[in-house]
Image (cartoon, rainbow, N blue to C red; front, side):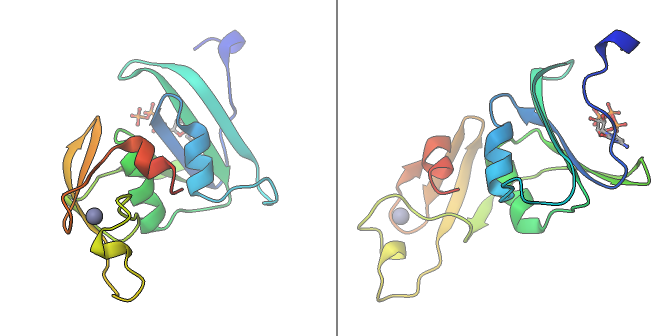
Amino acid sequence: MSRRTLRVSKIKDGTVIDHITRGHALNVIKILGIDGRENGVVTIAMNVPSQKLGVKDIVKIEGRELNPEEVDKIALIAPHATINIIRNYRVVEKQRVKLPSIIHGIIKCTNPPCISNSESEPVKPIFYVESEEPLKLRCHYCGHIMGKEDVLKQF
Ligand code: CTP
Ligand code: ZN
């Protein structure tokens, strides 16, 4: 990349979520609960040319690392994302997000009569990942199939 095409600067300490499926940078921001009141710099880049994906989104968050639940949520909507931990300007850890084959908790079944939605019974939602892209989740209890849109509504 030449000097003229430098897009976003490197960060000193924090997390870079790279290779986000195009169009999902703002959903990642939502998953992480970022609302602009944080102290560190947050950079959002959309439609960045990528060899692997054609175009991709990137989110850089200064001074923050992610917890496992946040990483799992990102995996649901951006299965190719990589989480880079940056310390003193260097990538000290690079992790590709990975969806487990069975998801416990995190999301709810969108089928209202499903037993996992009943107020009286403490039933933890369980889903089987039938396909990552396009996302297809099957509820363990009622067999209801959910896609990315059903998941996004919950974040
Ligand atoms: N990055 C950053 N600040 C740093 C170091 C890296 O913002 N101090 C960003 C890079 O711009 C890139 C991501 O973190 O978006 C990963 O960095 P790096 O591993 O150096 O890039 P690549 O080798 O291109 O990553 P990959 O192999 O995962 O495509
Ligand atoms: Zn269900």
